[in-house]
Length: 193
Image (cartoon, rainbow, N blue to C red; front, side, top):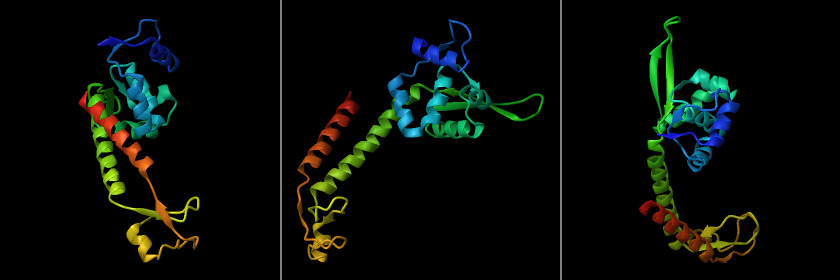
């Protein structure tokens, strides 16, 4: 395990988790991975992960207090992360009230696998899109916002735009295809590392 880096100690102090200068020892989740969470799960999940990063285990109520979020938003973010095995929970019973209390913690060893899994999904979608783009010819009337039509659809429409009633011309998407190919190659390189 690594000590929490100084920028994260500052965040932890701001949300009131760390009272002294030393702070707890924690597993480290880098900021790049955290930003990927932002894109996939939303800002609420980032706030929750920031709290989880600086503690070993914490209840959802404590997270809500530290982040100034509603308990429902905290739980929603936690459940999203839990669905992807990025956090785990331990259940215990409150001795006074008899209610179940859920203690949450990060599973940083799962973040790399999650990222790899998402890259594979994106790669598959990009390959499917590339095949579609390469196997079809497209036509449009070139009016901004106008839909593009496959050759088959354009023939049925007699190469006349049904929206703007202008003649359609052939579209060359070589630039778009090149961008798709570059992105596919980039993701394949990242996956092979």
